[in-house]
Image (cartoon, rainbow, N blue to C red; front, side, top):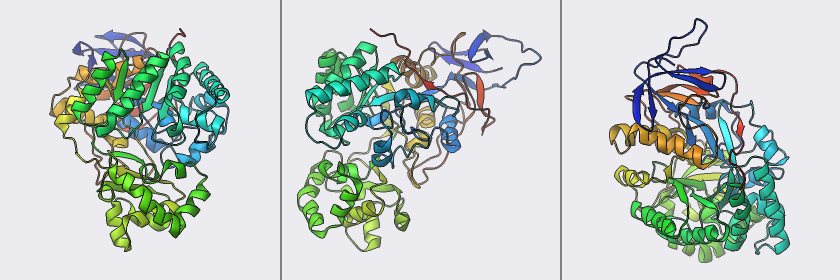
Length: 518
């Protein structure tokens, strides 16, 4: 890799990089051998590949379009198994049903645990994947649809499944405490599941309880109790709230002695299952056919309007303007394809009905397979986002969902947006800061071994960035635009993106945890 400048913790330095096999072998003023493949990096920066600490590409790692979207942003590794729901352990059926509109259905995994799932990535993708044991899936395997606290025997079985997943290479445990069945887990139950995570040197990653935003303190207080009860290190998923709330809550955790980090993406709006905020969890946990029958019943609809809708209108994340804040991103029912990109309020007006009936019609016709972009009551400016990203515990995470005709732009734009908006345009980060937040610290935090730095002997997951042109093009109005300004990338020393086109074979791996137990 000739003529470029390496970005590391000290800044920029002009240097060539030699790669042989899977590793960086030399850095400096180098002369290529006659049989070397040369990547011309003149005027560009050589960075360690980015690590997306919150991805929903779990079932899509063999999809060329997904791989291209990631690599064009500079992402060479994703952390999957997020929000407490994914395929392993078990046969993958629950995740394929409940998270169909987020992770999709895995075409190959039908059981075999974390070991089998990680093996399904080896040699089948250009991008690496590390995996978190999903606590909601664990609970599903042991407790089924039960809303009751787990018994002592059930807890013991769940702990054993977590231990097994960690032995097989998982980097930690995840929860999604606004999703079912994780929502029904008690604090003590989660702390017990985190005990083997702490002993193994893994990390507890949480979509915390309570809806974030102005209600973040409630979720953070529970995190502190879980950490105190287990000793686990903590990572908060997609910490979306005002900058003052984020900083205050992280300070409170530090004051309590909790080792905590977080990810946050460079957008104000979120994206999730439509049914998560708009259906009662006691309903969402039921079999899909049962839910469909209930929401089609006029009597039950009237009850939801009378008893549940006022709760939605009081929620910290939505409020009374909910129907104008939710934009349909993926609707599985073809007859409602026309609703993509419309808010519920707009779609209801076109259909000649009200927002709640439209919502229930769409969910029923789609067998609940609907995701939506969620606005927030107080849109955060880039200046406020920069304050959040200035925290040393911040890491890059897209929460990217690739399923949908009109998805959230974060799936295709997050990492290029960090570089354009916060490095080049606003200079809130230096290029070294970007490497710290997007590569080095995530690799260390998640136990990914010798990744995240450009050093001799380290894995050659490398990207080449044009500093003057790198940019996101995906927007809320046009969310499928791909990033520009990253035209070359290597994974394990093999070119996977060359001159802007996908290249090579499939050197990506299911990355196994690289932290020594104890």
